Image 1 (cartoon, helix red, strand yellow):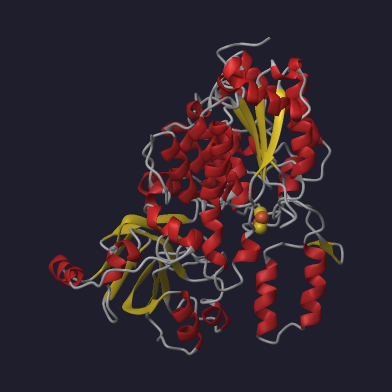
Image 2 (cartoon, protein in one colour; image 1 turned 90 degrees about the horizontal axis):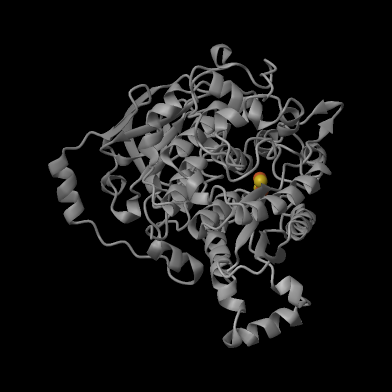
Length: 559
Ligand code: FES
């Protein structure tokens, strides 16, 4: 079976590679196994979170699939870090986005350094999904992504618990409306198995993008983490990676095209999934040399109807979606509504339209047809203007406010904002700006869990607007503008705003501007002191290499 065209042969064949063959034999391989193609099976299994814990058995099944199909599987792992953990302590939010790069880079290192012929990648938390997809696209060898699957949700008094209510309960406990004992008891029942968060968080939104773009087999991402079906699908993924190698078929860069990226944004919009994917999709595009930035998503987010009622936009968990046919139900509804490109290649190479021909119809509750949507748009709006030339985003779904104009109240970073907002250092009508929290300034684009809590608790969400080059958590309330790009640390216009400057936000028109002349802004820029980089550790390396948010915060150019 040995084929000199396989990449791995450069490390194995001939007298010069005798040391490598010695190594391979020392790992337990015989000559027959060494003569086969090498398939890397890489996962983020760890005990650091429930998200990462279901991956080892799935990786083992993927290895069986590779071996059954005539390959030699080599397993390795990389890091995973959970936003639930990182969001709640001082330096934690710096690390999550950085982990996306570490995952992509570490997988590239092994797949390229050891010259594997093909790969199966498995991920299961917010940054593991884009990290794996970036690595696959960068290395561009035959490969399949397997998503680890969501956790089973819990029940209380016979009623399903909406995972996201934990944050509301946390607020109620802090304000004394709920006892700590009640909080703890509800929390005990909220998530009852390993797996990713059971609603539309970044991991499951990313997995949906992976499925529509072709990285994963159709119908697989919604299968719960603990279902035995997952072992069968992982085994199939191993076989499929071998098929892609031996028989040919799409490579990752065939899956990453402008059309497939537009399809992915359409799916995010139709589910009103995690807006973090609007950051990750340009980064995945960058790996394929496709220029796809935040502004390219503006019209799609406006015109795509929300057709699902998945948590947190409705009562249904991913397991409910799985029971009516999984993500292909959503894809088919969008295709029938004329919202998707039908010719993009799926995981097995068939065009999307052909592959979805027999997908189930919407049930009318968890998924609706596009002409009977829950909402006419995605509820996520891209804004652009002289305050954010590269764009920024605002979630308008659950609020009636579309327009806000007021004086800027500036806080230099999350720590200052937490103290200042808690002290009431703002007035009704202010546009509260928290700057210096972008990918480079933070570094790592902090999601600021604590800063808006006093505003939320006092029911003042509609009295102020919040603007940052970092991120706000889901359910912050009011007009919360995030991802402002370019960020303040990189000299974006947000850095030039002064207390009292009038900021105008119009979510109908999609604009965000500061009412200061270009000439005045340039004068302010001329005297702007240079920003210092974060010093030390991974944060320094990241801050010195990361690019703008609207391009996906990439840390390298396309090559
Ligand atoms: Fe891992 Fe939510 S924290 S998916």
